[in-house]
Image 1 (cartoon, rainbow over the protein chains, first blue to last red):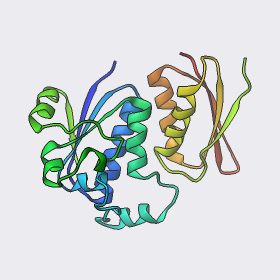
Image 2: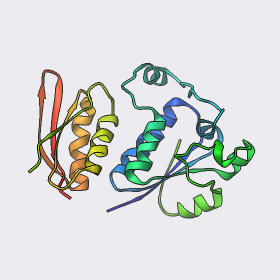
Image 3: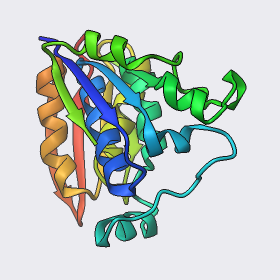
Length: 130
Length: 76
């Protein structure tokens, strides 16, 4: 049976972004209804001209950055959307604060969405925070 | 019955091999068969779990010279 899974992604650490993308891609590809909400520093990776390299928190982040066999978190989020119809939503507050236009946003993202809407949709469902 | 297609996912880590397999299976027809090559030990346990969960058919799994060969049939 399909579950509803919500992922709140706020950190720009490589480890947290990678784990969030792994949860989103595997759950979406397994038939779960997945929604990912990006805010705070996590948003920087999805806006043109902002951060391009996620900082490693520790040894694992460095290992993943050095090994070409580890799929990138951006590739995994794209898999979640393409293979499992996951919704990848940018936080409207973050979009406003970054003064990002629609053209600045990564095309994998859905429409800017407010926190109220996200929390309302996530009510009673499983929520993961990274 | 169609010919078994090889998906080479060697030297990629979890969930790379699973995503590769799903990419191919999504575009395939019911009855198509795939042989996934993987060197990631975690995927050897994870992929049969995914196949069972979504309702495809596991045809077999064997390790040959450090490479896992996982055979799957699209069932729906």
